[in-house]
Image (cartoon, rainbow, N blue to C red):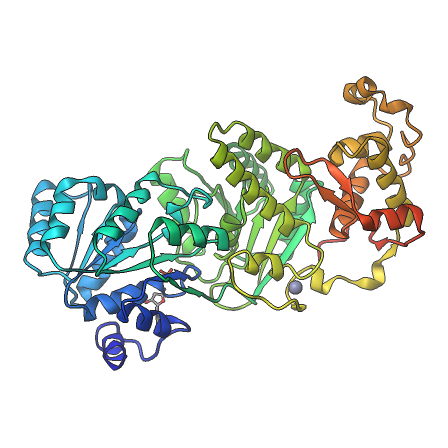
Length: 510
Ligand code: ADP
Ligand code: ZN
């Protein structure tokens, strides 16, 4: 370890290790297979770069992102480290030059794209040198249960088996415990040491509100964050364009960003934002990779993300300077249905099941009634105490504003029961408010005694109430089709006079 500390100082110029880096490096140097789950910016690269410099032979680094490969090899070269990459972005001349460098043991680290592992010349090259370490970056790509499965990664298991004397290290910023297990199995790791680190970001205020009037809610939110830099994420390019037009029209300094814009426009808009010349960037998920801006004060999700992994990465772009930043998610059942619709279009049953499971984790977070850090952080396999924090909506809710909503709960629960626990929130609210939709007339539910008994509240308010009933554990959502089911707690409310307290009106976004 003394040698590792010396390399840290001499080559990289740092005085001390970040949390876990030291134990991870120790594990790799001991040639124990190692799995590292650490958020972006946590310092994963040193965990394999330092051992690579200490091993006698070669370390390969498999990474799917050519741009990151270029960055990393460039930085290492500046630090005087012998390093090369082999991928399709190189000219034939450069490629064979790099090939020779590896063959003649002139480099310590070789960066490879996953598709290269199917090439005989690459496999031949590896067999001719001493291979000490196989590093797999973005290791979640090997799992069908992850959010970014790449079939080329599957070849890594065979490679790992072929070199039993090399140590294997997998790294990722996002892997649920299930995906972690998958990585261990598919990479054929032996007695893998797992390190899961530091997912909490205390300075991010986490807030979820029911999406009722998204444009108005966005304007209110922006008013609270006047002149502060921030990102608004939307589901589609079209939504980005529309919102950009509307917000520009009312004088908000903003620019759009999505894959439908020319490269030039995207680079320009990102630069304007990075240099604080434009306040807000309105974007699809295409925005954010590698963005280097520490003073982002808010991230607003105008639409529901497909999974908690993307959500975590996107909000993670706020508050990198460590000072308070706010993350607001506008949550609606319409968005859930929209995502479900896309899931249903998938042909591959495993992919479909995985997407459903990911969406469910997202919903669990959105509907959670205790500290939001519990579902968010434990999702990545980190242990997290069931304590209150000071920076999420649920931990700071104003209890004094709660009122008795037992009658509303009873009406809602009865409607769920009378319609045989088969329908989602929208439908139940339609029954309660006496909607004349064709679906209700078809099923004959307009003849039920609960039909129209909730007409004292508008639909929007019922949606807000319904969300609280779910949060309070009175209802479960059936996984496949989203139908609501009553829980034992609901029975107490319906038949044993148990009271329900909550907020009758949508709580103001404070
Ligand atoms: P990740 O790959 O986990 O996203 P990186 O490896 O790119 O993170 O590291 C993020 C930043 O932190 C880099 O600028 C890196 O130089 C810096 N860093 C990593 N380890 C240390 C350390 N021990 N001391 C100081 N800075 C560090
Ligand atoms: Zn909290």
